[in-house]
Length: 175
Image 1 (tube, rainbow, N blue to C red):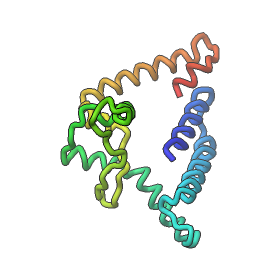
Image 2: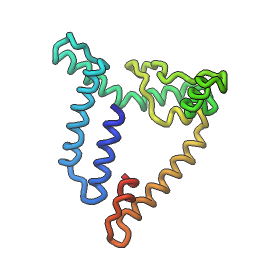
Image 3: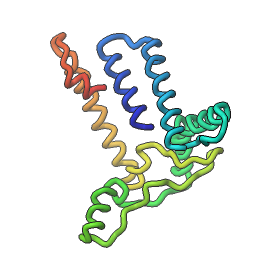
């Protein structure tokens, strides 16, 4: 479901770069996202029950949407305030570790993908995307990454409309 959100954010970024972003653009992006979120959740049986009524499923999907929208920040705050384990890059580089483990090159097993549940005040195992990198490399690393991303973001923005010419590749990378 996150990929759908990223897709709609990309569309909104493109629209906002070539024209003024209007409320109708946001609504026209939010409605399909919510519908796809619910449909995908129903198909994958995440927060739904095929034997339950539509109204019951709507209530649980609403709770699921709330968990995705605000649960990550609350869970991240909980982890930051209660300490976390340092994984030394084992989560960021999980895929190469899993491949090397399967090939028999290394003995260490890859880290689990599913996070532990925390109660903030509802149970969630959805965290922010930065949480993994902070646990792997620390807060200073995240500050460097965010600074680098900000510089690149501004570079692509300035180049997207350089010399009053529309440059799609920079516009795409900016959004």
